[in-house]
Length: 311
Image (cartoon, rainbow, N blue to C red; front, side):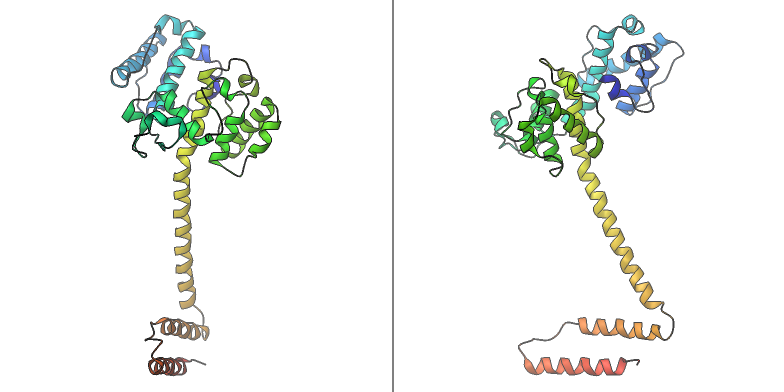
C-alpha cells in the first residue's frame, strides 16, 4: 500500500525496500511532501544522512518522532525500518497537515466532550488532538450518527463506512440501502471502484486488505486521508467553475453588443433602432396609479417609436 501511495512523479517506486537504499528516492519524497529543495550528495550514506537530518530538524519544530531509524538499516533495506520511516512521513506531511485544517460541528454526537468548541475553529490546532483522532472525527461527521465508527480497523471491514463517506461527498453515486444486503468484499469493491473512477482517488487498498480480522490501521488511515483531500479540493473546483461561467456570460454579452453594432446595411440601422427602443422601453415609468401620467408616458414612447422607426 505504501508503494502505491508513493508511486507518483518524480519518484516512481518499483520496490519500496530497494529503491530507498541509496537515499535519492527518499529525498525526492521529502521534497515533494515538504515543498523544500534538498541538496543531493553522491554517496548513498550522505543522501540518507541528509534526509534524516532534514526530518530531525522538523522534529524539533513539529514533533516528528524518529524512533530506532538509523542509516545502516536503511542502506540494508530492512522492511520494518523503511515502513516505519514512510509512515512517519505520511503522518506528518499528509495526514497531519490535512487534519490541522479541520473544523467540526460541535453538535455531532461523536464530539460530546468538545461541546463547548467554537463550531468553526480549527479543532486540531486548538485542542492539540492527534491527527488520528481528528481524522476519525471527520469520518464520523461525514458518515452520520447512524453508523458506528470506533477506529481505523474493524469498523471499516464491512465497507459501509467507505460508502457512507462517498455518499456524503457525492450523494448521487451510492445507494446505501443496498450495502446491508451485500457481502463485505462487494461493498469494498464498489467503494474502491467508485472512488477511483469518479473521485480520481488512487486505489491504495484491495478488499482483501480490509476484509480481515485485523485490518492494518496505518493503511486505512492513509487511504481515508485521500477522501479528506478530495473534500478540501471540491470547493475550489466549484469556485473555479463559477468564475468560468461568469466569464462566459460576460463574453456572450460582449459578442451580442458587437453583433448588434456590426450588422451590414440596412440591418445596421434596424439594429441601432432596436437598441434605442429597448433603452427607451426600459426607462423607469411614473407612478402607475396616476392614470394621467401613465397615459402621457405611453404617448411619449409611441411618438419615440414613430420618430426612430427606420422602416
